[in-house]
Length: 447
Image 1 (tube, helix red, strand yellow):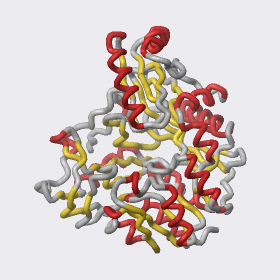
Image 2 (image 1 turned 90 degrees about the vertical axis):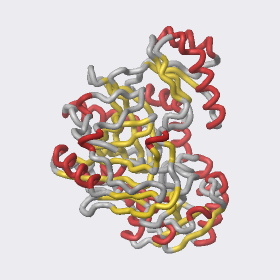
Image 3 (image 1 turned 90 degrees about the horizontal axis):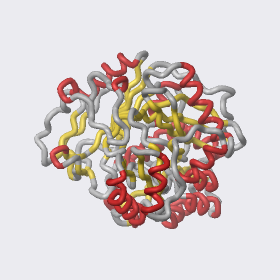
Image 4 (image 1 turned 30 degrees about the vertical axis):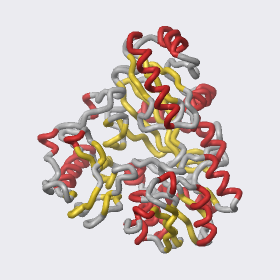
């Protein structure tokens, strides 16, 4: 068992990891930028090390500085959380070279699934159903030929990255030239690997993902599926488990398919296999693999009674033996993400002082903010995840509404109104590449 672990992250996920380390009796080391000196994760950790100025490129993405902090404090392992260095194979390699355990998958596994077009190849080899698509495109003329072969509408995607960066829906050939130039420009500006490819667009789409955990020796468990179809600008905003409206056969097939893919590479640690499901036919197709802990992992923990962070830490330290079978989910869990954004300005991030922060009792809240916290302008503006669990989906929905009604987050430049009544606001608008099917509406729901 480790005696000390460094968390190479900030905010809510750093606080989340520290909570599990305390439960395990493992000392925690936080790292922080100058902008995060007063952040909650810094005060919760047993030790804290400043790693540089506010910009992430000069702090949370500086692998050498983080490794030096681990060496200086005697940390035996590094948990990367999500984002930042969590899916960086070079960082995993550097940890190994320094004799420090990277609490996550192997470099080879991150490389295998790090690019979407190579992930598609692995999925095809494992017999996972795929949407019609292309390989990497040479130019717009090549894209035109491939789009005609696949049939419109199509999605033009960057092979690297995530979060909707470098994705465009194309409904007709006349849209292709401008879309290709835009996605190509974004890919080159944001990613080391700038390749782009085409994939068939599913009109009535649901975003379903399967939580997996592998022991690195060939055993992989599936811990149920999550529905993440409610999105804005390709970013998930509401996630729930179990996915509503699926048959037992569909659930079993999704789980078996995810396990088969991840067993094919002897996957190690927590990961997620994502699928797009055709709501009309019920058929599902491979989308991508996330080789890290997901933002929405908490809903799976709520229904299975597991602690995925604990499993990750114990596996990396050599102290985990996976159960013979995956824990059976019980009840339903829903998560909403709370962002510091201004809806009057197209949901632009809204930084500044929080003069009141009040969350309800009796629900799980993952956050790093309290009254008096500063939301810095340098990072993702998510300030909290509100997670509810109940015996049924209907009861979970009612519990979520009550929790949102009781939530107060006041910004110094805003009048401090209570959270909007979800019964008046309706559902959040979804990203254009994933239309919201009727069965996914949480009546009523809101962000």
